[in-house]
Length: 200
Image (cartoon, rainbow, N blue to C red; front, side, top):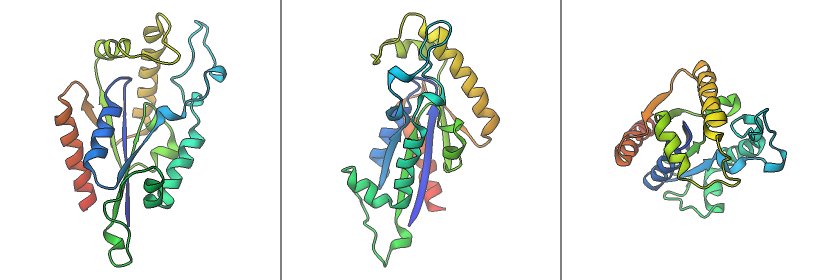
């Protein structure tokens, strides 16, 4: 059995979830774990001197729980998928065990900044969009709790720039993608590269 972890990171509203879900639809025996599902409760997330909730930091996330889910997948991808109601295209059998390939797509805005997780990722992609595009897309989404006035400029974007600088100092084999490109073009690009990695 071969196991491959693909990381999809990027700026807020850069298209991470859309790309990840589209890849899952195309790649057999694949599933997605999203970092957004591991935020701590709003009541325990601290605020800065401007009164902004500090969501864009690793300490706002249950990274231990996220790593536990990834470790469950690593132990037995087939059982992980079936337990989450996902189809397994080629069930493991003794005769073709070495030919079975399972792919985990991990997506999130800080996945590459967390060393224990980053070390497990084989293929790394980072979706980038300009400030104006990110801000416009974010303003059209509804968050719980909702973004307070000035939150994007006062917290989200400055933290993105800080986290990106940290990430670039940690990771040297990142593939940067233009998140403003056509969705199908982006999916096809990543799909072809992942399949080439599977064949290696």
